Image (cartoon, rainbow, N blue to C red; front, top):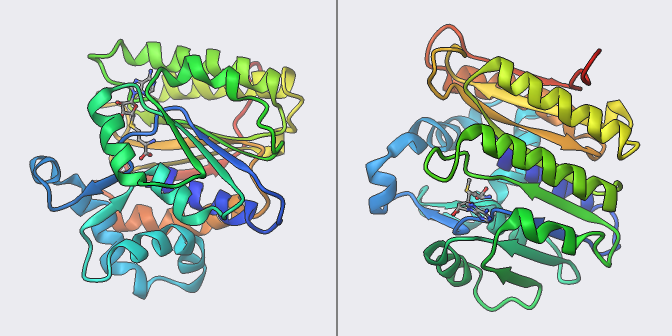
Length: 282
Ligand SMILES: C[S@@+](CC[C@H](N)C(=O)[O-])C[C@H]1O[C@@H](n2cnc3c(N)ncnc32)[C@H](O)[C@@H]1O
């Protein structure tokens, strides 16, 4: 949720300049989720997430509504008669991007790649590759437009390798990418289960972005939301690290996250943060 709200804010900002840009999604997923489908019925967590936002948003303070407007605008455009379709990152991108912009989407698993192709339909801006997004990324960078956004959003599944492996893969991919194209906007998603692990990752990532990419520390942003106390071995929440965060994104997230946290908390230990991460050794 923070990921998609933040992503939509980044697109909104990129759209303020007419020059075309490119969106690269290394782990694109299926593009759209049917909230009334079998899968969503088996795991109805969405009801406590976007379902609550959908119900409560009209009563939110104006600054919260402004912050969520780009993301909710896409959701509204798919749901004229009540909430049923939830847009994943590729669909948020394609709905928000302009005619002259381009999308490059990687999805490794065939059934998901097929669904993604179906969701995206015939769209000359979009190229879908069924391949490993971490491996594919270097070839996409720098994009010919020299403007754009890269989302790195791996599944952190135990079955597909350990969670640690995904943190490590993400750092490796980030290091390669940032050397090739330090000017890009990067959004890295990661789950919050263990605070030490997340802080170590953020610190290492921030150091690398600053040292290898020459990115100013103030342009690196962490936005996290956790709905229960962290450290009980259970998934507590998730968040993003944004490199070269576009102007205004942090203010919007600072407005939205306390409201989202109140709305979605499941116990006393819920919380949020929007800040620049401390680089390693600081
Ligand atoms: C968390 S989901 C992506 C969600 C999507 N980015 C969104 O926000 O809507 C992760 C996806 O990555 C795919 N995947 C797993 N390993 C991959 C890899 N090495 N390269 C590309 N895709 C991969 C999975 O099949 C899954 O669809």
